[in-house]
Length: 114
Length: 249
Image (cartoon, rainbow over all chains, first blue to last red; front, side, top):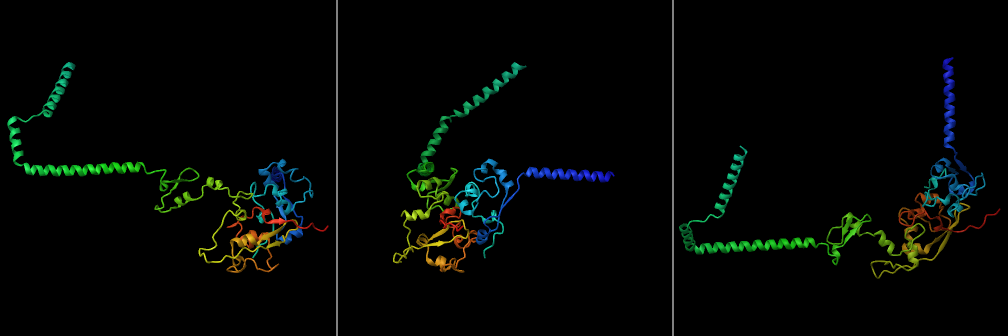
């Protein structure tokens, strides 16, 4: 009985700790998978936006709602707009954050050109 | 006891002073002095020669001393502001980086000192791009420089080819690229890109170069120069200038 009890308590503690850590991480990563054909043509995959990594350096109000609306599908993010200084390009212009020509820093499945 | 001791001390002091006075003011008795004078007169020529030697030695010593003084003075005046060879070059931290003497072998630090000072570069008023880099294309367009075509004055120069090529961007939302042959052929020969050693960078036929930004970033096509010797890829809008026609809905 004692053994079973301890095991149960241990699992409970583990679960609580995990949920706690999840809450501490706060925001999940977002996969930006629009314009699939255009991306395929350009030789890049979808973008994984690392929310947690960005939250380390910036506050929520830095981007929301002025640069990114807080709704799924409300932001028409594309590279053309980024180049004009909208969306990601507001910071990722080589001055505030790393420039946009490092494709593989955001896009997955970046092909290796022979 | 003390008084006696003191008296002894005074006594010894007095003795010492007395002896000192005696030795300093020691005068030979008259007879001895005369005898010495006589011997001196007898050996006059020899003595004279010795004296002459002495004077010569003294003169050389004086000369040497004056020379030393002169060199010391020279060392003190080594930094002459009117002399271009005495110019001191300071680095950005204000430390001595080199001197302007061409006879001094150029070490790395001397070369650093001879290089462009950031403040001096700013003072030239050269046009810059959005990222603060020198815009060489603008310098050429404004006729600010006239680079020599060849060291041989008889060499004929091919004028730059004025042909813009629209390269369609792969992405649907990205502006197309207008490639100006003019500024590229201003600097380079056709063979640099179209007949490159180890395979042409650009095959001179429409549609035969499947360029992508991914490849350019990896050092292919434009990336062979841009980001290395030409302006970097940071400024997207410097090349992606031609807007695409609106997509059909």
